[in-house]
Length: 310
Image (cartoon, rainbow, N blue to C red; front, side):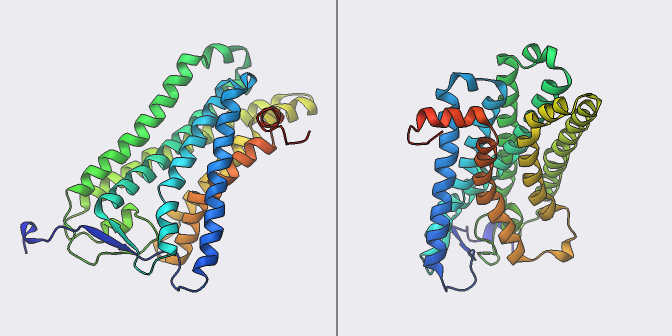
């Protein structure tokens, strides 16, 4: 059957997070609470940084953008998932699926790049402290963030255009609780070779490329810290990058689990659990890590939330 004879797909059916309908209301309440926490905690980080002048530094400027990306990533998936937890039929329109694909993948790509930019910021602060003001001046920070957003959204947009050229004539069932490129491509009756090549290139340049750059930055940071003579100096230097290192470890550990492990070990149930980690749990932990481990952020919180005690 030629491509022209295929009926255009208007919607897809999502398998959902839970295979059985038991306890759906309980999970709805749980995920609604977690989603609300993501929105409030990341919004609070943004407001605290914007309203507290001592936090108007490159590192906190990058954290503001990271919080915004986390909100977009979670908001691209959770509202529809919450809706489906309360429905028997879990459908999503073709346009809604494409929008979800774009926002979700653009957020992931941008977050990878922002984490790399933040590791560079820590590298300059620890390895070249005397040149920090010059190397991380406002214009450069704006440029770095703009490039991160442009590459993240641009890569996602190209992959979306390649999906739009496909015909879908197989099952409409997406075996996930949201639209993701591999699960959507599995339903196409057109050749997905070009899509898979572009996705592979994106994985190499965005995931592996950023991982290597981040690892390189921290290699130089560790070497510099080890050269410091005093124990107190080493602790002070490490404390300036410990929060970011913790966030990077958390983020890349989930990505490595998804993409690096052997294909034979893939399990849909496990994949869904890990997807919940990087769409919901990580965006909750990021603001907690940056706030609980940072006295300046705590001071900002106390100023905008007077009911928080010292």
